[in-house]
Amino acid sequence: MNARLGSFLRFLAGDAQADRLVPPTGYTARLTVFAAASMAFLAVFALALSLATGRVADRWGEALAKSSTIRINAPVDQMDAQVLTVMDILATTPGIGNARPLSDDEQRALLAPWFGPDLPLDQLPIPRLIEVIEEGDGFDAEGLRARLAGEAPGAILDDHTRWREPLVRAAKRLRALGFVSIVLIGALAGVVITLAASAALAANEQVIRVLRLVGAQDSYIANAFVRRYTLRALGGASVGTVLGALAVFLMPSSGEQGNFLTDLGFEGWQWLWPLLIPPLAALVAFAATRQTARTVLQEKR
Picture 1: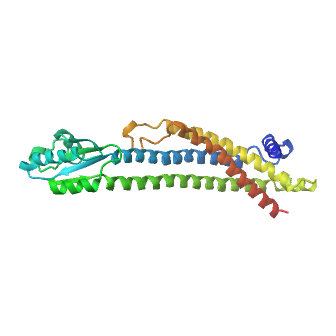
Picture 2: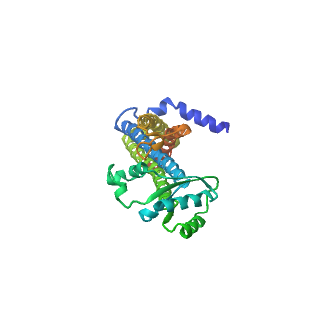
Picture 3: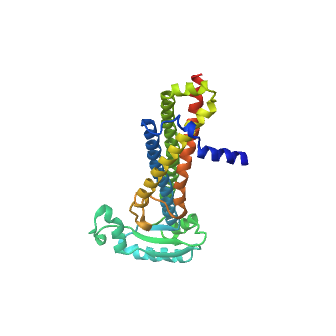
């Protein structure tokens, strides 16, 4: 354990002589920093999207899971009697906390997005809607449907299952897509850093030959490149993460009525997740540069 800690500290401290192998500036240095910053910025948004879609879908799913709707289709002269019958059935059904018929204004507000705000409900054969709120473990939907069929044939129960299940499936797929995007972003960053490290090794071929002549080991040379590119990736990813988190923080929010766009962001402890991006970017750079350096040095023997 102490040996590993010592190696890690030596890696961070670096070696002045070895660091001269790697150009401190140039297009490869700029490319590495820019790639790490850009990938970290995109990773923050992918992570925010993944968490936000799950959060919004959970909110909607919970709301739909605790509420149901009964739609009553009956002739106008029988509508009030059907409503009273349904209310009596609901009053004696275990698991129902509250039930109430929607007013004309509430039904008009529900239909306004499709038919406009001036819909004449009194002149159209619009079904009456009863909102049902569950309590405890909920009610027996199949048993309630059977009672409605026997006592109020015009009443149809909609427990929102057909709306809730596709929403949950979509949320899971979007969440998975977000994490897949993060993996692809990390892989792309590794590819860019690999190309930059290869170009730097090729540009310093003469220096590497001289070092070998004076007894420098390939591991010594490789460590110089690994350290520089790891620290560059760490620095670039840190900048990209801060900018990405700031952009997410400035996104508008619509509170409890949020959707996938206005609710894009982190909540509470979720703000800790972006802090993992810079060290992960450094780890990707470490692995990519180490493998590249070993491969290139082996080929140039």
